[in-house]
Length: 199
Image (cartoon, rainbow, N blue to C red; front, side, top):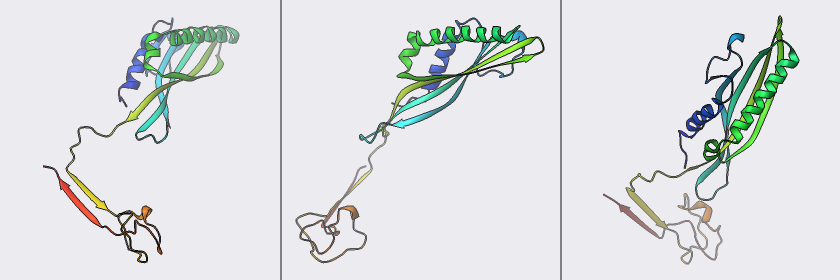
């Protein structure tokens, strides 16, 4: 069933898991962090995609939520910054994929994408890595079971009672009407009608 708190619950669990990695953790946090506060890990919810499971009598999806994890480090050289990023990436992956609480909340992790960049600011090199984590959850939307049935209208356009030649305007079941000339119904006219009202 769809749970509006599922993403928030997963983000809270993700933050708890990432808190074990040796870096300052922010969520959603300021995306601009000074070099003195690095290394830093910043987490925010990036969006989602719903993929229908087909018409099986209910509305059901595999929903993939995307969590963005931004990693930033500072180092004395470009290679050192890249090495620090790769070390944090390995720690983050191990923390996420070995976490039993996260695996209980997710149906699957269909992807993890990374983008890395290193830039220099004088003698300091800043390395950045954006990790996009796909988290798949099953969702289904049932009708409101608390809704009360107030009225039923039942209209009968029978197969064995038919008019062979007439075309009726605005038939009750237009997709079921056999075109004239016909040898069987439904013919587009109502042979019976029942209305039931519930108090």
